[in-house]
Length: 211
Image (cartoon, rainbow, N blue to C red; front, side):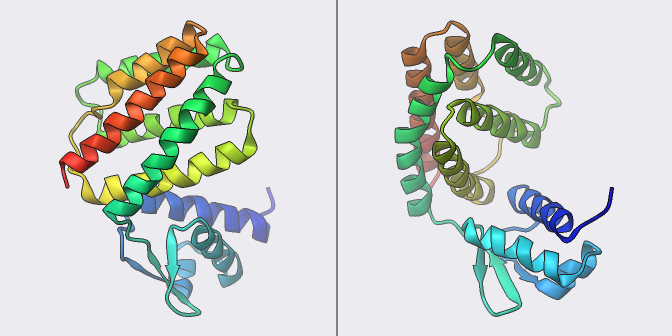
């Protein structure tokens, strides 16, 4: 496969996004365009595009023409983002319930069950499932604006949770995730939406309790 500038930019974007989300690049970390391009073995043009994209998504803050820093999310910003998520994600769940196949739901439940039964499962693994579940539901809502909004809001809340909230081995939202999946499997849009709403309320309350 020929590596075009667009391919390189996309690869750089995915790499940097992952490093931000797993705290390899923590909040406040300064990123120098030239140095990061060299580390990823690409030219500055695709790196510049990747950084601009992350800046546009609110994950990076522009310092100078060639320097950016990873955004530090405040408690207020996190709570505000959860407030909007509590309005949008239950509706996304309601819309997704009749659209998503039982096969997809069975796969999600199987993955979650394996995590719950695996004491060695890391918090990072639980975060990966969290991304998969919420992202899948948003996708199956059938509303592209809703999907992109949820993705952006989740990045904000996750940035704060990853940086500020003590991380237990297993996500406290695991049982809530299971309830969401089971209500969707039962084909009940309203109960599935309510399960999502309760999950988000509980998640936000947990953050407030620790701050």
